[in-house]
Length: 399
Image 1 (spheres, helix red, strand yellow):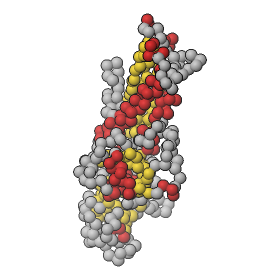
Image 2 (cartoon, helix red, strand yellow):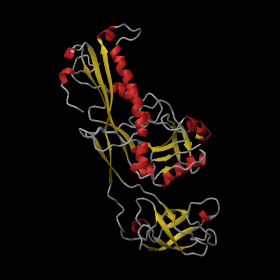
Image 3 (spheres, rainbow, N blue to C red):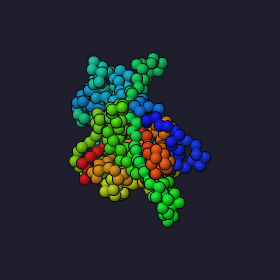
Image 4 (cartoon, rainbow, N blue to C red):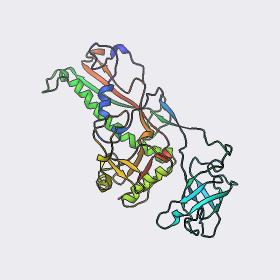
C-alpha cells in the first residue's frame, strides 16, 4: 500500500476527526450477511506480509492400499502407502490389516503382519498370517486394489522405532488489494435523498457490498500470482487454485457422472480416510443443492456452534455419507452448475493485512482545488489453506 499524507485523509465515521482511515466494522459485517462460504470462513490473525507463508504437517491415516491381489492361498502382499506414511515407522510386525470391502466377507478376515520387506520404502512387502484369529475359518481372496484399515500393536517392553515426526511443509499465498473508488461532487453530496441522512456514507456501504461479492468469487476462483512488487500486481490463490495447482490435483476429479449420495460419500469418506477430522463442508451450486436435500440429516438432534470468528445466521443443513461422515451442506452461487467443492473449514482462514482489513481513504471537499469528496475503499486479504491435498476436494462434470 502506498504511503499517503495522513493530513489529507480521515475516517468517514470518525466524529473526533482523528486521522484513522479504518472502515473495518461495516465491512466485516458485510462479510457475514449471507450463508455462502465466505460468510462462514473464520477470520485469521492479521498478516504483516504481502507474501504470506504458513506451515502444514502431514495428517495421520491408518489406510493402506494393495498393489497386487491376495488370493486365498497367498501369504504376502505389496502395499502403496498414503501420503505422510513411512514404511519403517508405520508398517511393522504386529500390525493387523482389515479389508474395507463390505460387500462380501473380506472384512471379516484379519491379516497379521509377521515380517516386512522395506527394500522399496514406498511399497513394502508384507508377510501375513492369514485369517488371524480364525474369524472365517479359512482365508478368502482380496482384490488387487483392496484398501485396508491398519491397527498397530507393539511387543511389551519394545523400544521406540523410527521417529514419525516429519518436517513441516511451507505454503504461501498473496495478500490481494481489492479497490473501490468514490468521487462525489458537492451538489450530489448536498442533494436531499429521502431516508438517506448521509449520501457519502451510504455509498461507502454500497461499495463494501460490492467488494464482498468480489472477495466471495475470488475465494473460489482466484489465481495466485508471483510475489507482488512495483511492477507485479499481487493476486490471491483461491480454493480451485489450491486444489488443482497447489496440491498437484491430488483431490481433483473430472469424471463425468451423476450427482448422487455415492459420489458425495466418496468425497467425504476419502477425506476421512486421509486422516482429516476437521469441520467439513460440502459446497454446491443451486441445482446440486436441491438434489442433495433428500440426504440431509435432521438438525434438531445436535447443537449448533458457528465457526469461530464468524457470525452464525441460521443452523445449516448437514449431509451424512454412507460411512457416517458428516459435513455441512452449503449453497454457493459462485460455483459452476456441475461442481462440488469439499472444504475443511478448520484448515482455512481469511487473513487481513495488519491494521488494514478494510480501509477507506477520504479526500475532503476542496482539497487540491477539486469541489468534490472522494474515497478509495480498500480490502486487503489473503486466504490461508493447510493440507489442500487431503482436506479439500473438487469434483467437476457432475449432472
